[in-house]
Amino acid sequence: MRSYTPVLPEEEDGTFDLLVKTYMPDDGGPFPPGGTVSNYLDVMLEGEEIDILGPNGEIMYKGRGEFEIDGQTYHFAKINLVAGGSGLTPHWQLIHAILTDWAATNATKH
Image (cartoon, rainbow, N blue to C red; front, side):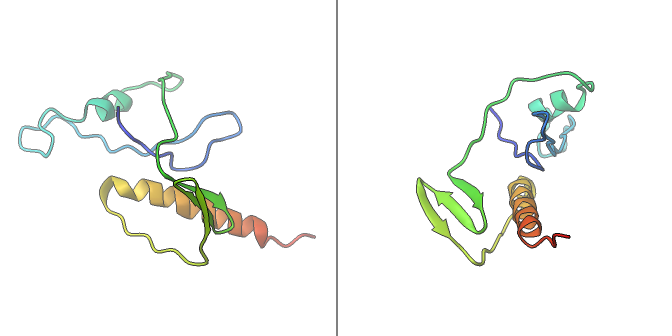
């Protein structure tokens, strides 16, 4: 099993986007045989389907600064994010959710 985080929330039609770095086979690279799943995803054709599981994690953003962590609800006015490598994608998803939530909350109605 591999963990991947959708870049954006689920679309209305039930689809979502993933950002996956493909590790090609390379004897001198960090993964000599290449990435098993990333190479499979790389050659998929549009319209092909795969089975997935999710979500996977202990922290859920509920909106408006509210998080659920290990079953407990917390509210934060500010958060700090530190990430590198594949850890950037979950942070990107959280940033997008916060900015979307902020825009919806602060939208000017005419």
